[in-house]
Length: 240
Image (cartoon, rainbow, N blue to C red; front, side):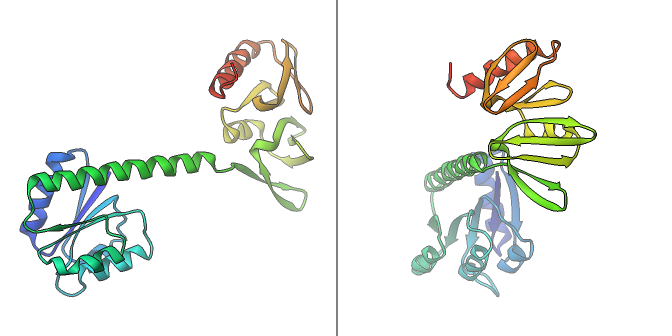
């Protein structure tokens, strides 16, 4: 987790840093003496403590410009003047600490900010996992995008890979070992020439895998590992 402190007074930066290290020792701390330095660095910290009254660009303007390219930063203003509070929330501030503040108040605000940061990280991770994976292949003169979820199985011959999808068959030059790495653990190399998608397996034995569309060869030496990984795949999908 990256936590940044932007304040023109070194004493204040050191004070806030001490409080952060006490409560969140694993945080990576960054320091900026003014808004210009913050923006010039292209900083996108997880949490930012930002002074409002600074020489040159004030904290509200720095926050406004920061928001133009980064909306994930949890912004906490630190100032001695309460009258800026409405401007602060116009730029999506998480909280507004008015000096002097107690250790208890700081702990409360930072704790809630860390919780919010962790929730956001989980949401982004879930969104990334749900994003549809696809391959980019060149078939003939055409460049094609193929959804991984629609690949039933692949086979290789004469340096070409034939993708059997739900709707069509797509042929392109490539190596099945590279395809295996790219497609990930939902696929299995049943034979040196075949790569199958567990999702579409209907039945199997030590010599063949029967899929919703087509059939792939099974190498006897790969059969035990196939069974193990197929059962693991089904458990992960709650299909026991």
